[in-house]
Figure (cartoon, rainbow, N blue to C red):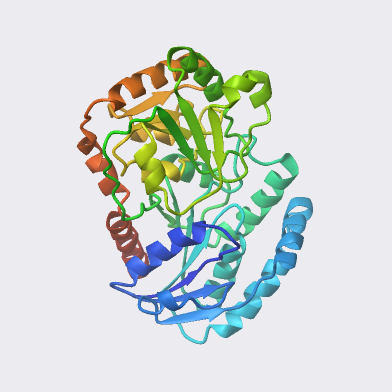
Length: 380
């Protein structure tokens, strides 16, 4: 099976996920890649060829304006047509790795697959356009037009969880015999096994933006401080949405909140933490599953997951004692904090997460993807 994988970097960590997937596929298939950045030497041992065509930041800003105001992608179309002339051979399938901020790969995938008369597979790590208030109405409907125009050419569409896939399939007219799949975001290989921490530290890693609202958690933490005055809450990442913190916590209470810059070395922080925190969008039926919890599963720490109802988190983590699911309200989160800290101070059976960890492993995810692609190419 010959595969052309199209993906963008655009300063985003998402590209690491894409690379993890097509490098695993390359163990049993021939994989070439087309991207917007210089060829990466570390990929040479996995992929046969790296096509490269720059896509400047200035072009990206104009692309966003065209999508938002007109639902069109003239700059992406031009890039895609130029990229298509670089591809000098046939492929069995073109895979477009796409996200809400990276629509050009699916546009290029459509153009190249049509030119080569081969199959088009689309794998999106986001629901595009993000529903339920994640995006402003003008941008939402602009992206919806782009999705409808390009996803309709796909022979295979996959999303990173069942809820997201069900939403995505409502956004475009399906090609006859469209095949679909759920491809969970693959986890990194590291396992984190640390001694029980002496600190009463709650740790959140990632970003807080859009509908990820920390206000409910801060109100619950305020109550926790009355019982656990030594407690600390550390948030690591960028774009922290903390605009209401002064109206929730006193100056003395805010001394227990700490913000730190993004880091790739999380193990020292995991070793200090007693409890790991995940905060989903403050809405019901949100289709997103945070990428951070995929890593949390491999850390021997209790997890508090603030989430709505009918969400991927509710479905996937139901029944796990070491993952405490809480509603978007102060009382539920306070009770979850008290329970999680009490459990964290004694040995827990984190091996209960092994089935989950297996589901998120790169081998398992790519076994599903590989089988789906082989059936697609055989016309089954």
